[in-house]
Amino acid sequence: MSTILLYIAILIGSVLIISTIVVMIKFNYRATRISKNISGFKASKGGRMLGTIESGLEELNQQAQWFVVEALSLESEITLDIEVVRKSLLSLSMRHPLLRMKIKEKISPVTGEIIHYFQEMDNTNTVDLEIIKTSADDWISVFEDESLKPIDSANGPLWRGTLLTEIFNTSEHKYNNTIIFSFHHCIIDGTSIFVFYKEFLDSLMLFHKGGKDEPSIKSLPLQPSADELLSHHLKINFRDKLIFSIFYIIYLQIFFRLNRKLQRDKSKNIYLKKFPPLILKDRHIKPATRVIPMYLTKEETTRFFKCCKDNNSTVNGAISAAAIMSIAKILQDGIIKKPVTVPTTFNIDFRNFCHPGVPADSLGCVIGICGIKTTVPVLKNLKIDFWDLARNFTIEVRRKIEKKEPFNMIKIPELFQLAGISQKRMIANHLKRKSKTGRLDNVLNMSNLGRHDINENRPYELIWQYGGAVEHNIGPVFGNVIITLNGRLLWTLLYFTNIVSDNQAKEYINSVFDILKEAC
Image (cartoon, rainbow, N blue to C red; front, side, top):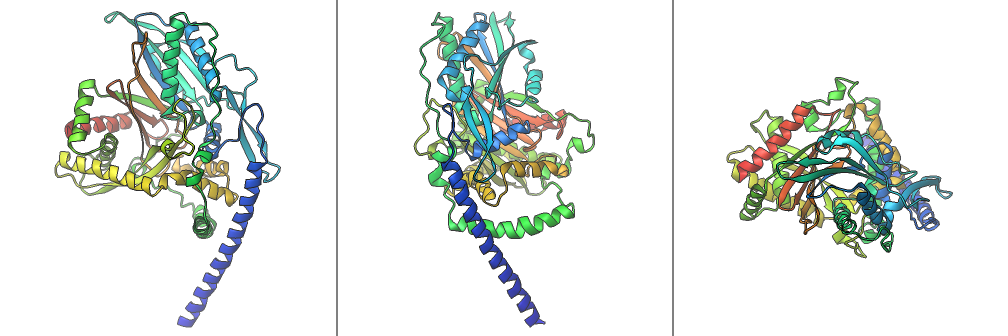
């Protein structure tokens, strides 16, 4: 019997080794073809080929997902002139090439795959700005409407603006305006969006003071893709190909197909196991991305930052700990009776890793996403346990960055491409799995945009900014975007009508803020 088992083991091992060699040869062949594909590509009209991140974001935009919707509020003692807004936005478009682009695609003569590339629009002297009658203080309903309108990338531009009707605050004798911007994610991220905002406010001030109608503006150069800037971190070596070859054979070719045939594609998301997606109960629900704006006052923000410093924690660690602890409490009906592990993803800015460096005044998407699993213990003392959790989260994030795990976001799609599996196919396969309702395994995504102080004696002051990526078809259960703007911590909660109810979203975010305030 043992001899038979030995022969079977040898046979299986031999098959695996031979299969791995065949797959490795296939990978190397495709790598050569893809390299020729890239080197032989020539973009017209000042464009370039999209990188891996950008191409993935374009595929998602075609599914009406992962484009960015942002609302910002302006306050002033003077009314906002619509023509001044148009001129200001046009000046930004003249300066930043990505604001003048569209995305075209063609079939590669080498690999037969679709190539996405930037191409400058034929008419670059206009901006896509819509003026609507909805009041500035009713911006949340407009935000949801905008979340249902993907960017028209084929015709461009890759962004648009919606200006709501101005209101006058009689108690403060000031005008309030709300503008909602929608961006293709490949031209903007949480860092570059503040380049856009600051230049927009500067232009408003210039034209308000009687600046020239057509200022002499020199266009910045179109920056390379993140793939090129990070190429020294993204080299796929023999070990990467070997590990992925074994994964490809054992998991993708055997277990994954077997699971699909047995229909074992149930979601592993721990939140959705307890609270199934609403759309599974009611298929008539219209998927949309909704937003709940939250904030700490300047006094509360100052006290919170002091607490972080006193407890040797980063702000990012503390806000992430509050979000994770909130989910843990909700999963156990308010009282954590046993340790629970909450899968989370966090955004990371790649700019510090780029070579050559990214100019501080350029637009573009140079970020990555990395996963982390955090275990919340049984709480004995909320303050002590909270700050332990915050410090541990920060330590784990730093460890993952040191191990270069965030770069896998780019390397993994490239490895799949070597296997002949495009990002388009990966997205389509995920959307087909109805029991997952487009949810990934992470309950939360955390995006901390840092601190910004940008009101410097301008006639129009930026009061608040809320927004994030549209993810009602693909994404986490809750998206969290945090920024400290002019001394106030602003928190955008993004949730999705097909996944959770308004009450579930409010329960989560109210719990987060209760924890933050109790910890301080």
